[in-house]
Image (cartoon, rainbow, N blue to C red):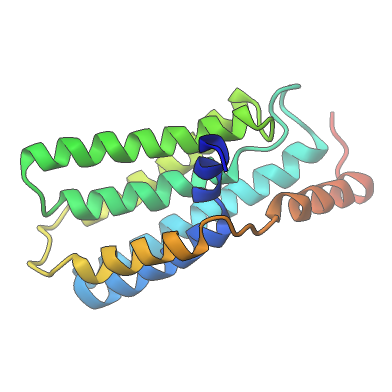
Length: 193
């Protein structure tokens, strides 16, 4: 397996959905009680907006190079970005910089891998990054509005790392599903103007 495929697999739903569950459980257990609902809202917006735009743009693309925002890029931005924020909130200044640099490199690497594999255009990868960043901003705004509880982070990071290791390489082929819905909507209901 080459680095491009390894990066793209980190952004697959087969890895990200269990990470969403792990973050959800940890937030419900360890963080301020009002952080989890904001996480659920951020996930719902990220997934919902990405899915809706995939369906809409499949039938009525905004431009020749924008038919499907990258779901890998959007959900990776939210999930890995949230993991970085959760870890950075408990880190020293130097550790924060390293965490943000590593997280940013991983997220951008996942987005770039989608372009390198010709699964998405640059515009589609950027639109996915933007959706994920907007959803992440909603969660971060609320999470950072209160000081983090002095709870250990290992109950989140150890299972998250385990999930990434055991699920890396698995794939949930959601793009085909959204393309089929988009084709159906275009054929039966949507008239592009």
